[in-house]
Length: 213
Image (cartoon, rainbow, N blue to C red; front, side, top):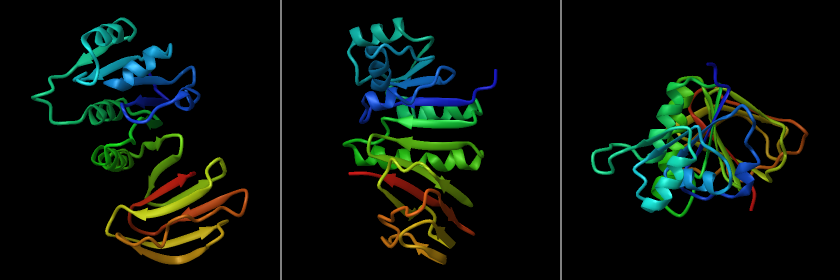
């Protein structure tokens, strides 16, 4: 079966805004507390997985009863976070797109590790994005067009040591064949001025962070 989109719900910041993104034909994965969020809001995950150390035994029974499949993992012997387990499983299904919710929250170490997951999807040429109520994060090596203006700012941060040949059109602060080096804040808080904005790069990996306060 060909899967168009996989939506992963992890245990970070979640809300009704995330449920609004679900389409009827999406394949839904709940990771640990993300699975509990789904079943508590009347959404049945196709798969729930993790070590479930963030839920009670009663809540785990609730998850198992309301999921298509449950895959528990040993919290001691596993080498990956619950989110990465869900991410790797999603990659193995080779969807057209992966959207990760609940990847950002109070644990900055987890948030940063989750952003780094975008690289593995990029290497497999799978469109992937991390979303919360204030941010939409993607990773590019060539170009990206932005037409959706629901976010106020567009920030560009290198994930590789340098990103070269950065050309921006449709932005308040355009660039032409510019270079960004990791550790610089030059690419923070740009603003779209046109109905369509385009980001092009020649070499490197560039995080595109659409955000609002």
